[in-house]
Structures are given as structure tokens and as C-alpha cells.
Length: 302
Image (cartoon, rainbow, N blue to C red; front, top):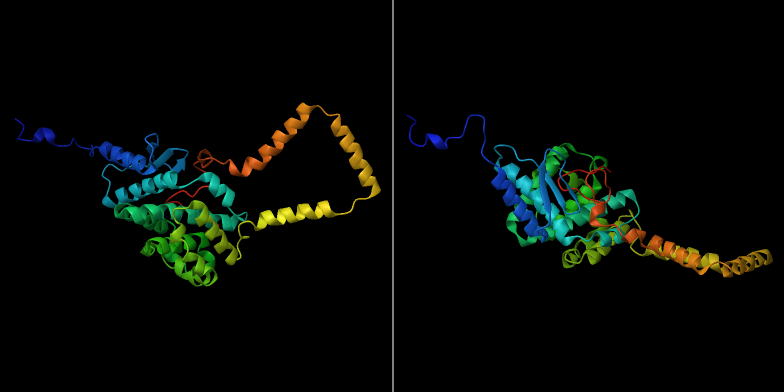
């Protein structure tokens, strides 16, 4: 006869059911994102965000407290991006240079994470665990030279420190220390202006663009547009020869004979071209290989 309580013992080789944990994490992600339609999947693949689909690491059979904190931190980070990030604004304000874009993307992710960290201490703890794991996997503790330290990570660490008061975790090593004097010397005043703009993505992006300009990594916001307008006006102001005037007149005469439908189609094509840079949706933030997104808990190369 079986002893009292024998029927409640777990079968050999069968761990505890982690499905309640998955449901709890899924509910938290949807609540933070502000959308019940967010799909949360757990898989043995790289964590990522694509549209409203959040992919988190598969939980082990007996997850530790640290593993749960890291997983919850990843979920919080992606949910905050869905709730607080506008991809169209991001694309419009982004700089052109590759290195500058890495910094811009990393700092924007630091902004959305800091919003959550300031509102909920538990969320801050989860994302701290996530970053500690990220830096440990990247072996940041073994970096001793500035040229080996990714500047985008250093700037993001300093921005989080300014916004939340939290120092980087021990696993971040000397990465921030190697870059801090340069960043603070070049853009110290801008760093002090970040907290007041944290809830305004466009205003925050303008401060970051000014920081990048001060660090000589990119033009300040608006400079590239003004330069394009200057080049256009310079071309228009150039005197034209008689041959050019004659060719222009012939072209105008030919255009008057063109059907109205063709003219309208050309205008539509021009309008579409002008909108290309601003019509990047969250669906374009796909999982692997996308340069426009900052995947939480993952390193991006310089």
C-alpha cells in the first residue's frame, strides 16, 4: 500500500510544470505593452521582437531565480519598446553614419527601458539582471582598451545612469570607464538634459543627435536637410546658356502634350519617394539581421 501523499510525488525524470510561469510572464508583457494582442512565444532561439510578436528564451525545467529575472527583463524591455517607441519617429530622426546609428539605436532602447525602471522597481531589477547577463556573455570584464570597448554600449550605460541613477553592473567591466571622460567632455551638458525629455521621443532624439554632433560622429539634426536645400538652390541659381534655354523650352512644349494621367502618376511616384524614410513600421523591426532594431539582451557589432 502506498504511503500517505505518495500520489503527489513528481514522476522520475519529470520536472515541475513551467506553463504557469509562461502564462504569468506573457500576461506581464501584454500589460506593460498595453495590448492584449501581443504574441509571446518561448523558444530555444535568439530573443527578438517582430511587430507584436515577442520571442523569449525557453525556460529550463527548473528555472533559477536569476534565469527568471533575465527572462522577465527581456520581456519587460520588449514590452516597453512596444509601449513607448515610435518607429516612424525613430527612422526620421536617425543619423546616417553606421557608428552613429548604433549609438542612436542603443540610446533609444535605454530611454524606453529607463521609463519602465523609473516607474517600477521590480522591472528595474529584472532589466538589471538582463544587462548583467548580456555583458557577462560578451566578456566585457576582459576589455581593457578603449578601441575594444563598443562606444554604443558605453553611451547607453551612461544614459541609463543619468536617467535612473543606476550604475552599470559589475559584469560591464571598464567599458563605460574607458569612454566616460570623452563622452562627458564632449556632451556633458546634453546628458543633463535627457531626463526632462525622457517621455518625448522626438525631443529626446534631438538631444541625442546634438550629442552625436558634439562627439563628431554625425551631423546635428537638420544639418543634412539644410545642406540638401542649399545644393538645390545653388543649381537653380546658375546661369543657363542659350542652348539650355532652347532645350528647356522644347521639354516644356513636349510636357504640355503629355496626357494628364501620366503627369498624375509621376506626382504619385514622387510623393511615394518622399515618404519612404518615414514609413518604416514596427513590422520592419524583424528578428534576425535587422539593423534598425536594438534586440534586448543581445550585442550588436560596431
